[in-house]
Image 1 (cartoon, helix red, strand yellow):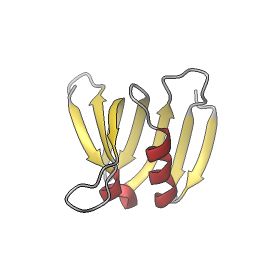
Image 2 (tube, helix red, strand yellow):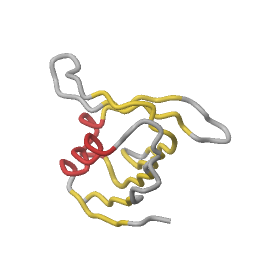
Image 3 (cartoon, one colour):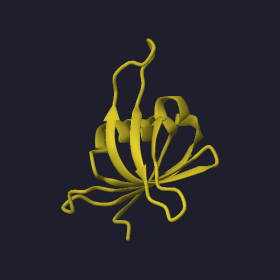
Image 4 (tube, one colour):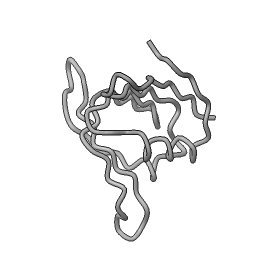
Length: 100
């Protein structure tokens, strides 16, 4: 169940990821014909090769594929379609974001 539904631009959703994703939060992100569902293992906002980055490490949940991926959402921000964010802290609301 989702507590809050939002509509955001690509830049706004990137800011949301940078400010709200924490270790062990559950996420389900659809971007660039890919759906990544799993646990956030870390968020790295340091520059990468001289460019700003927002690299998120996700441990994928899956029956066939269970793996760890790293996605630089700074690079793919224009490709994000939607995301569901379920904070580990149960006092915080779960969020569904549709990207316009």
